[in-house]
Length: 75
Image 1 (cartoon, one colour):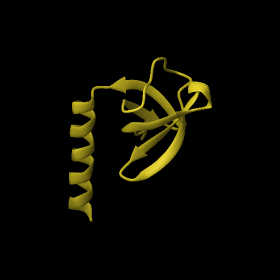
Image 2 (cartoon, rainbow, N blue to C red):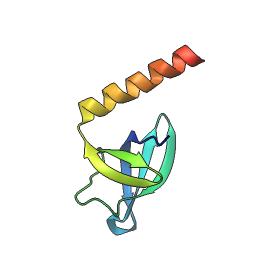
Image 3 (cartoon, rainbow, N blue to C red):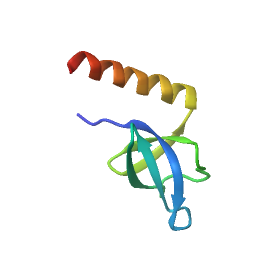
Image 4 (spheres, helix red, strand yellow):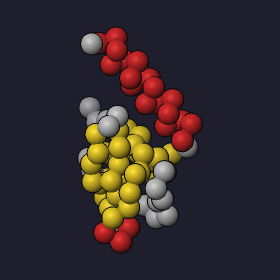
C-alpha cells in the first residue's frame, strides 16, 4: 500500500528544485521537480520524496488531524 501525505513547505532550496517540509515537527528535504510555483507556506502532497501536487491548506489540515486522531486511537 502506498501513502501520500500532505506536508507544509517551510523553505525552498537549490533554486526551487527542492524544499524543506514539515510534518509534525519532522523536517525533510523533498523534490519539487514535478511542480511549478510552490511557495513557502504551501501544502503539497508528498510521496516517496516527491511533491506530487499542491493542496488546499484547509483540506491538508483536516487530513493531518485525521491522521493524528487515528494515531491516538492506535497508541
